[in-house]
Image 1 (tube, rainbow, N blue to C red):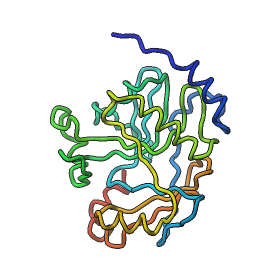
Image 2 (image 1 turned 30 degrees about the horizontal axis):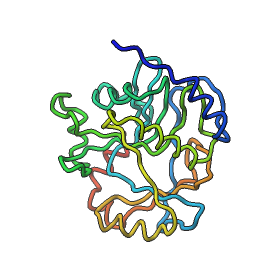
Image 3 (image 1 turned 90 degrees about the vertical axis):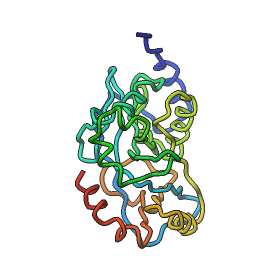
Image 4 (image 1 turned 120 degrees about the vertical axis):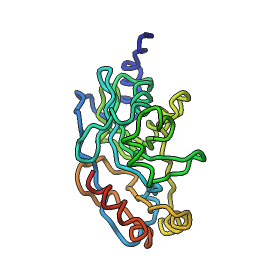
Length: 236
C-alpha cells in the first residue's frame, strides 16, 4: 500500500495564516449538525449565500486515523452501506477532515433521483457503484484545525480548493453557491423540480443546532409531491 502523503504541516501553515477563526484542536468526532430555520421566503442581499437543496440525506463525512465514517444527522455511521463514498473519503489528500453535506443518489445523467436512495443504501456495493454521490457544502475540520469559528465564505473557499485538487475523487463534489436575490434562486430551483434552497450568512461561524444563520425555503409543491419520501428522510 502506498503511504499517505503527510499534508498536516502545509495545511496548518496555510490555515493559521489566512483563515481567521481557525483554531488548532484535537479531532472532535461527530459534530451535531447546524439545522436551518424554515422560512416561506428566502432572504436576499450581499450578506447571504444561496445553495440548491438536493434531494438527499444530510450526512457528515469524516476521515481520521485511516478510517472513513459517514454519519446521519442523528449520529448513526452509514459508511459500511456506501463503500464507494468511503473510499473517496480515504482518497482525499488530507490526514483528517470533517465535511458537512448531503448524500444523493444520481442517475446516468448525474441527476438526483431521491426515490432510488433508500434502495441504494441497502443494495450490494457491486450494484450501486457510482450511483451514490456526496455533495459537500461545508468544511468543519482539517488537519488539526477546527474551522467552525471561521466565516462560512472562508470555509467554503478552503473546501473548494481541497476538492479542486482531487480529480481522482469522483464521488465527493463541491456545492457551489449563488449570491444576491434569494427569491430568484428559489424560483429557478422550483422550475427544475428541486426541493428548494438553503440560504446562509456568508460571515457566520458554524453553530450546532437550530440556527437563523441558515434559512431553508422549500418549493411550495415539493413536500406534498414527495410526502412519503420526506417522512422517511426525517426519521434518519
